[in-house]
Length: 117
Image (cartoon, rainbow, N blue to C red; front, side):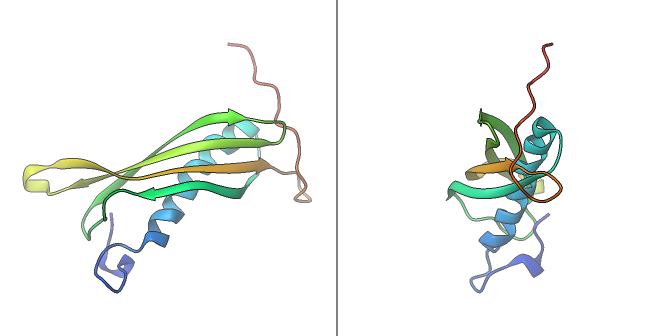
């Protein structure tokens, strides 16, 4: 839930707060697919479609869109659920991020082959 402590000088939720949630959401499927540690190497795109307000409940949905030798690209869509009296859900942010799988020393490592179903 977006709280007053997350606001910018104009009273909207600070974009950096949303960006941190996007990065966390994107890293989850990337780490699962990489079977280990990943680091964010690039925010390919980040679009704020609508402002987020205090009291909005945000949900982030992440899916892998590309897999390279050491990298995984993830798309994240963010929705804000607002106005509990007459609830509505609005697509507020969309982002694409690239993560790289790394070993214990922080060096890139290959993405393991995906097991057959």
